[in-house]
Amino acid sequence: MNTDNQQERLEITDEYPWFLAGLIEGEGSTCVSFKEHPTARFGYYIDPEFFIYQHKAARELLEQAKTFFGTGIIFQKPGNEDVLVYRIGSRRSLVEKVIPFYEKYMQFGSTIKRRNFFMFKEITLALENKAHRTVEGTLRIVELAYSLNHAGKQRKRSKQEVIDRILRDYTPNSEEISEKI
Image (tube, rainbow, N blue to C red; front, side, top):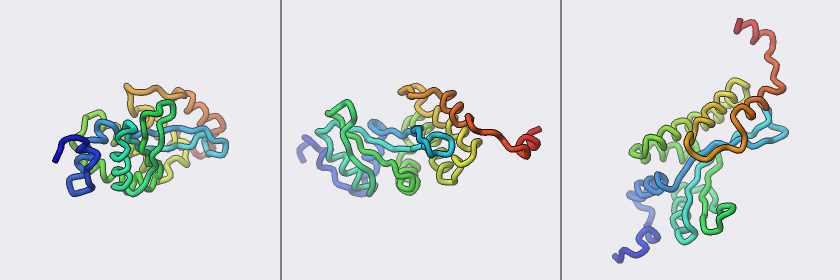
């Protein structure tokens, strides 16, 4: 086999998940964003997401990942027409496909990526268990999310701004206050 464009000719075989794990280690990420929404209970919609980035010339790698996971979308990265993004944003798909994949195939990844994954997993499962429906659960998710990618890209809003918005209309009932006293 000619070594030119080997990655583009990869087939989804038993070995493919290990290749995909390496691709994700280098070009993948998880994140949890807070999107302002007027009807959200505490002012924000909490959105966990999984991404893989590739130059547009390697679109086939993203197509293979999409076929492997059986879900997600591929789109052009805003502001950079040469980069494509494969995104899985469905919480069900994250729980049923992405998290088990990470647990099985990403065990040899970097310490930072593993740490971020465990926080991402905790947040995603907390959302599945409806922890975001309580102030305490939402604040725990905020703390975890703002610990993700600690040295990476800065967020649009400070953690304190998000917390202040969550707590703005929150008045604990007298039972909660008396239990804490």
